[in-house]
Length: 157
Image (tube, rainbow, N blue to C red; front, side):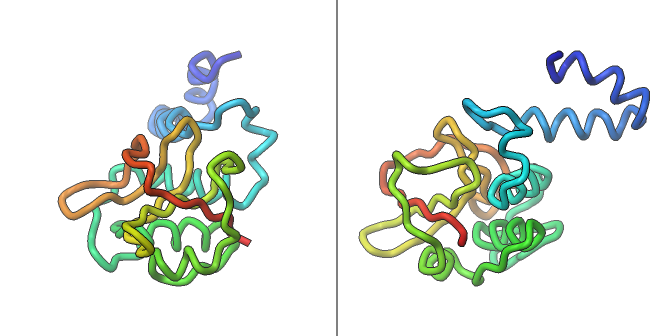
């Protein structure tokens, strides 16, 4: 049964607004090559789902939620809700993760954007070359394709 086929039964049980929220959030999480139940229990995947639930929240420099976020504020908030503590800034978060190669990245890992040796942005890997992140002033939390090769990956310990 596909997610779309389950929506009518969800609507009957949860109410139209709740079911549409469940469908919108669930449909926007990208988990390639894995059944949702197989990865649902990992901290990274929980953090990814939390970040995805914040879709459309406005970017605000220095904000850590629950309604507004900057990039590291979103990752901090999402992992905290998933049961893991992260430091405040993207660079500090990079220093607290287990560094991994692009070939070993998994859904729920952190993606750090860098210029030379300086980390300037972070998001949560959603699979298929995409991240959930809070991009910049005037934008909102969203799912977006990784736009550069200047990234490093880290797994929250």
